[in-house]
Image 1 (cartoon, rainbow, N blue to C red):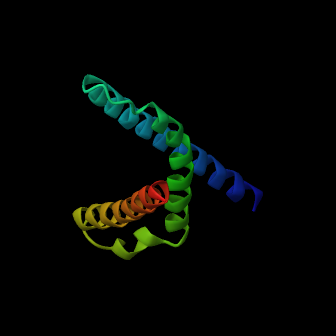
Image 2 (cartoon, rainbow, N blue to C red):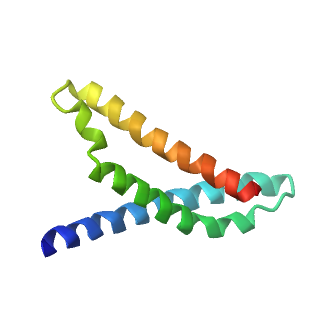
Length: 104
């Protein structure tokens, strides 16, 4: 049981790190583009780690709920398309909720 917990924590940590790097690069890209138009985007850099934690948690929960298992036994292309669609929908939903909360 302890090995499983450590394995899950390691997976979650790596997912958070991956999302943090990815979201930081996206925020840096937006900052560079908007700086050309003299628009400040710096305040959103702080959201990268928070977003990474939230997104990784939702991805981890989806994985625990076996969201990717529905495509098991099908051709590899179908599995890839299914997994991409499921996890993209989760990320899109999280992004929409985040923007709504920021707007409030």
